[in-house]
Amino acid sequence: MNKPRKKTSIKDISRKAGVAISTVSNVINNNKYVSDRIKEKVNSAIKELGYRPNIIARGLRTKSTRTIGVLLPDIAQPFFGQVLRGIEEVARHRNYTMIIGCTFYDIAEEEWQMNSMLDQLIDGIIFFCGYDAYEHIKMVHDSNIPIVVLDREIKDKKIPSVLVDNFSAMKNAV
Image (tube, rainbow, N blue to C red; front, side):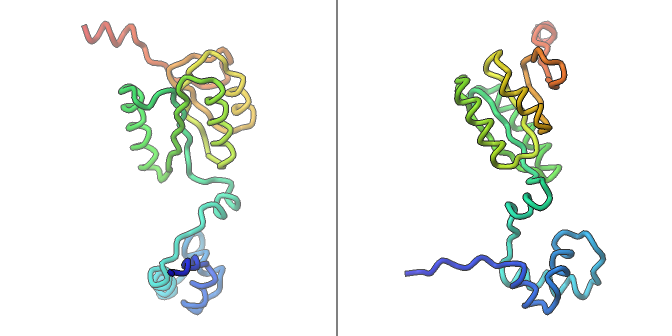
């Protein structure tokens, strides 16, 4: 039977490279000057030991997970798929990942998904509303987590929204 492999820590890298833990941290985060020779030693140890940073620990420290939540009512609809693709391209270009939640036009599911995303320390939410109810959206906005609502105008004008001008789109199509 195979034993579970111990996750490589920053301490392991420090020992292997023969440098301080803070030096390893500075190399990983590229936040202070470290000589090229030391960087090479640390990066070699990282590669050899298969180190992968703990993004949960980093998120707790930096208060950012570089993750965006996207909530939509029906992932099978082509419109949502096209918009998701655009969001994903921009997110990837800016080194963000996405968590996608499908609400199936269910207000209780919408609220549950939103709370679940907030529990994961996301940096913001892009939200396709399935309903005109918006108290849970206002709660997110009031907690200072960036939120943008797509394809639905919210009565609270402080909550940003992006709308599709269907009339002009159809007029141009015809």
